[in-house]
Image (cartoon, rainbow, N blue to C red; front, side):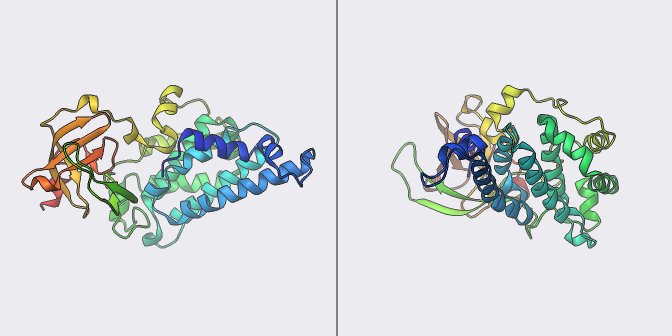
Length: 319
């Protein structure tokens, strides 16, 4: 699921006081501000309930798009703003607590903690009200996070200490995808559905370095806050999906050429070396090296199955 800007705008409007008042059923007294507020709160709770649950139990890769919705809700400015901020922060902090505060190392999830903390810091940078609430109301949790990251300053050290990356048993990010296999030079093939693993490196730092995360948390604890300190330009956030980390959406075929080698994950989740044999618009046709032409596929350039650096993952499959 990709939460496009228009969908987020609709969700945010329906959860605002103005939107609730404008869309209340004819049987309700649309002139009553109190009724509109209750309706908006009820809608917000319905939106946040599944998001909260999935943040707590699902792998972080599958929850990225939700942060576009959360950031949109945080941008609303009306009399329910404090209520929304409190609900959204409770949602994220509850998931954070589940991820790293268990006494058993095998029940601590390092990448999940790193992921949630990164997005929480981004919210502080972009929304002054979040920065203000967090530094005044959650010092105990933030202090515990500082201790956690000081104890485990890297993913590798955390895993050596017995921590897991996330809830997935294989410690590999995943999402469900419908893969439509086509041929640019012939007829369409049937669509297939399967589990697709994305390309996040096992040991790579998520977002800013751990040392910077610690520094940002300490700045919040000191009461200074980090609002407005983000380094990503607003226009890039708007166009790149920065708030939900959909970096793949920025890919373009303009830098690709026929004959170029890439890594591609096939439909049985195995990474293979492939060659680009066709480019049209945002579509890339690939041919698996040392395989018959019948296995050629056409992928979106933004597909998580496509790695533009050859031998990144296919090399590991050979070991």
